Length: 243
Image 1 (spheres, helix red, strand yellow):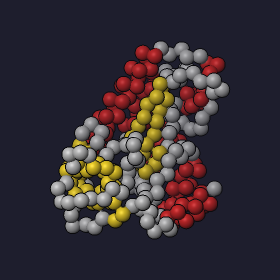
Image 2: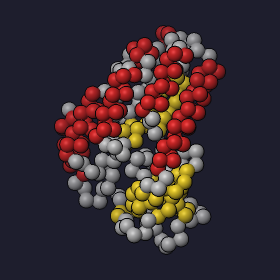
Image 3: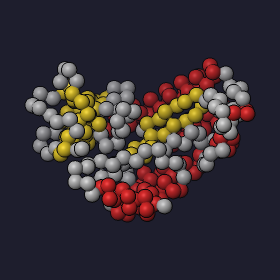
Image 4: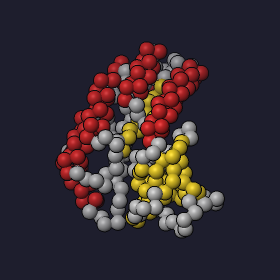
């Protein structure tokens, strides 16, 4: 129930020292859309614009074999509708590659989906048989080398998309949380759109004095690496402590 779920989020948001609320592992179905519509209706600013929703595939045939909900069009529409509510939203999803019966045409659908939706963060996993799963009795007919080849092609495609996204971020200012300070004094920070431990970070060189772990500082993105970004602090804006 989206209303009851967001009721809980609203109560959490009342905690005075809490700056960010991040929703993780939302199933890619209409219930997730209803949750985000309710968040938008209530204008819950502490909920960060971050959608983690693992679709696993976009081929309807493969998803049916997995006994999972959805297909290309349903997932594309879901992500587009939520992005329309939150223009700064970034998406993390995942794909399971090499499920029994998957064809090159099915993999091509994933390529097309990534080009259309441009998900900012993507994880790829190779299928392996697991007891008590729908695919167990189907065996594991796709060779490991073929699975790895398909994943490598998809991963390279996503790196191209990510480079374009990084270029669009250069010059933008984000409120970033300070996660750690490395031995060289470099700040390791995160945007609201990046989850701890699994997503990109922003590296910032700073000699302006002591900084507080967990505090939030405005950072302008000025460059990028393959996955991570570099930036500089914007001193004119105030920081606030996040616990």
